[in-house]
Amino acid sequence: MDLQTFQANRQRFPSEQLEKYSGQYVAWSPDGTTILDSDKSEFALDHRLRSQGHDMTEVLITMVPSVDTILGGGIEE
Amino acid sequence: MKIPYMAVPRPKAIPSLGGQRVRYRPITAIRLIGPTSGLIRDGLLDTGADDTVFPEETARLLGIDLDQAEERQIVLAARVTPIRCRYAPVQIHLTDGRDETYEWTAVVAFVSARLHYNLLGHAGFLQYFGAFFDGEARQVTLTPRPSFPGHRAPSTNY
Image 1 (spheres, rainbow over the protein chains, first blue to last red):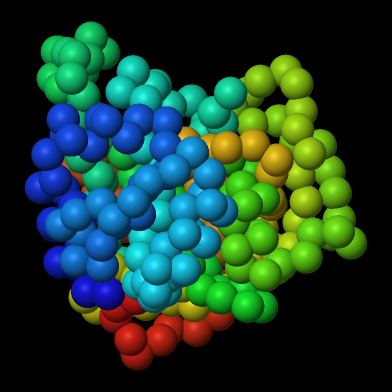
Image 2: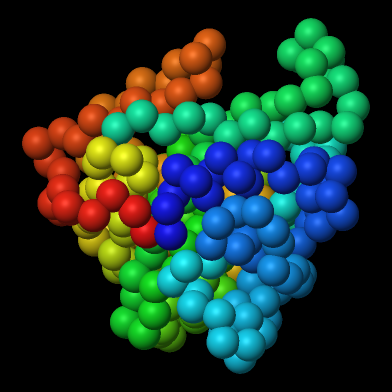
C-alpha cells in the first residue's frame, strides 16, 4: 500500500457517503478511493473479505464513529 | 516523522471550534503483525491513554491466543466501570509513507469492547518517542528516543 496516496484519496472520500457507515467498521480499498465492505463486527468483516480473496495486509479496516461523537478516550458503549 | 492530523468532516457546526465543520484528529495508520497474520488499522495518538489498546477481535484476527494472557481491569475514557483487558505482545510498524518506518514489538492491551479508535497510548507506543502535537499546523512530530526497542526499516510503505 502506498500510504501517501491512500491517505490523500481517503481524505477526498465524500463525507456524506462515509456517514452512512457510522458505528460500523469499514474496509478501505488499498488506494483509499472506495469502501470495499462494512460490518458491525471487525472480525466478520475481515473474514468475509478474506473469503472473497482480498489481501488483508493491504486493506485498512477502521471504525467510523457516529457523526456527533466527541472523543474523550475511545470506548463505544 | 511527521504525521498530519486526519480531517473528519461533521454535518453540524462545532460550537467549540467557532462553528467550523471539520474536526482534526491525530490518527495514523499502523501495521500490526501477529502469529498468523498482519493487519492495517487506524490508531489515535492519545497522550491520555496509559496503554496501547485494541479490541479483542483484533487479537483473534492476528492469531493471538488471549486465554493465558495476563488480565487486568482497566478504565477507558474516564468511565467509572472498568472492563476486562488482556495483555499480549504484537509487532507494530509505523510509517509516514515517505521517509521513515519504525518497527518494534510491544505488549499491548486487548479489551472486550468496541472502540471508536484504537488507542496509541503511552505504554508500548508513545513511551518510545518524543511527541510534539502542533494543533495549529495539525501535525504530530514523532522522534524516536534512545529507549526505542525496535529498528528503523528501509520500507516506507505498508
